[in-house]
Amino acid sequence: MRVKSEERRQAMVEVARQAFTELGFENTSMSEIANRLGGSKATLYNYFSSKEELFAAVIEEFGRQKIADAFTSLNPDAPLESELRRFGEHYLGFVLSPEALALRTVVFHEAGRSNVGREYYQRGPVKGWTQISQYLAGQVARGKACCDDPWVAALHLKGLLDAELEEPCALGVRAIPEPAEIRLVVERALRVFLAAYGR
Image (cartoon, rainbow, N blue to C red; front, side, top):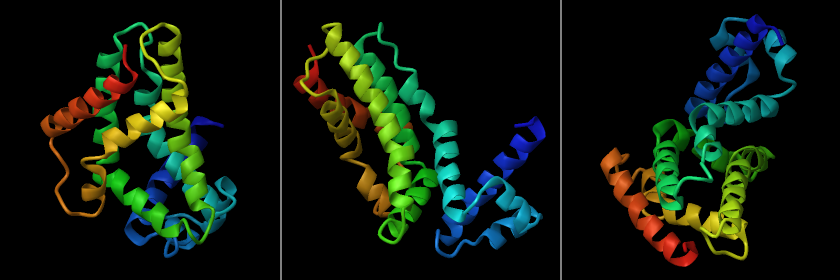
């Protein structure tokens, strides 16, 4: 794709993300997105065949910009605890950001009525946590971790990281935590995780 076309596509995805998080999936039309872009609906359809496809692109691009590096940059040669600490702080900083919380609210609201929830899960969480499970499998092979099923261990890590803050923040019960609090939460989560899976 030419640079100009790619820039145009990126602009469409960003405007669509703002529209979806403000209005919800159901109330956001392709016409609304085209109007916000200042272009035609036909141009939008040249890039995306449907609203669902555009929303899937929003999920992928948002993840690529904000969190993908955290999942892919784990160094297998570095100490397990320090790498998981770095990852955990990045991960929680992302999932607890207002933008991520707003987008996930849209997904959960729409999940029972369309394929949006499945698309989100396959293009977001599954991809990221598969990479974590592969990293953990490598650590088992190196004798740095101990687990029978790296995928289950990855999900346990996710659950421990999410346990204290994710639901209260998503429900608006409490404010988004400062980095110092996130660090403490990650430390507590890793203490439990490493007691079960560390060596």
